[in-house]
Length: 417
Image 1 (cartoon, rainbow, N blue to C red):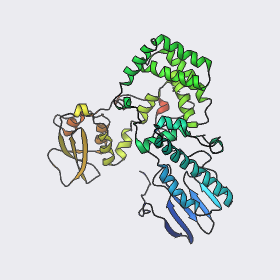
Image 2 (cartoon, rainbow, N blue to C red; image 1 turned 135 degrees about the horizontal axis):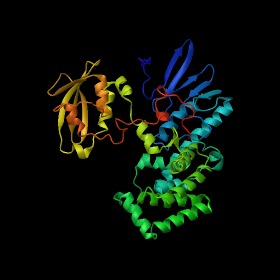
Image 3 (cartoon, helix red, strand yellow; image 1 turned 30 degrees about the vertical axis):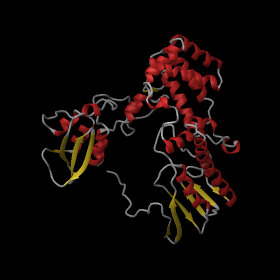
Image 4 (cartoon, rainbow, N blue to C red; image 1 turned 90 degrees about the horizontal axis):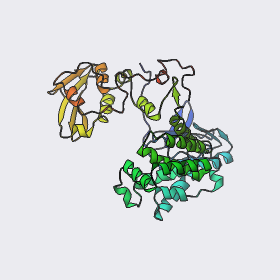
């Protein structure tokens, strides 16, 4: 059982709170950066600031290549103004080194905040000049003293494109993008126009061999087209691995380096788990598939919310279904309704017809498609016909031991890369 106890008293959203804790005055204020629920602390007697991801040696990660919710730079900058107003002599940041001295703290705060504001403001300036996200990323200028040796995690171009997307969305000004060809058809037509796969393979290999950032990038673009047409193209895979590794070995950004090198390793079959090659897609399937034990331990609502994202609109088309469900250990009854290709989950005052009672294990088994003997006419059996679990680990499959949960397997040097 978890020992976690949820807090009984929460800070008001967006408000600065003055408290006295163990005789020590402390101000608590919003400190939204990588998360929207974090706070900062200021101890006035000690002129001490405690922050979360506000003052780090690298440019704050407005966008992470792994994906995530939009980290609004405006919110980051607004919250930082409170930090700047304190003239602190000591700064402790959860993600960065501690700093001492009013001048050092002020300069570090200014640099961290001004980097983010510059990316935001300059991206909007370039948007006003008619640029899309990619063009804005290519044209945004940050002075070298603000940028050099400060892209150890993310990179300015990625952040600018995210600011564009966060303010305007995906569409630039190229009307082709409104209803483009499918990626595969677009790649096939482009490759054909360029003289066919053999010619494109030769051009990609030549670019990779010549080297240089522009050539390696061009090689990646050409192999993207080839692999979109034929994912098993051995020549394209080899060339792409060469170009990806070359770029990964030369970037300052840990984020970008990780993706480049990982691409090369999986293309070469050298990303190994338990001695066998694995791919990012295999790992994604494993990571995205919860264990039965995990589902049985969390709330009924969390199980049902997971099912929401399994509905396949093609399978559910034209179907309408409603029932109530109750699970052991939880006195509440939920109403589950499938309609218009979505699953609506609400609380119900009483059992309806039809209704299903399940144990926590039975509910977890249903979520993962592991029910051993579904009953005819059973509401869950009917709902199951509208679900798609193809992106989850098959019920009978076992991942390599290296990917097993850490409490279930030993870890020598089983994960090779």
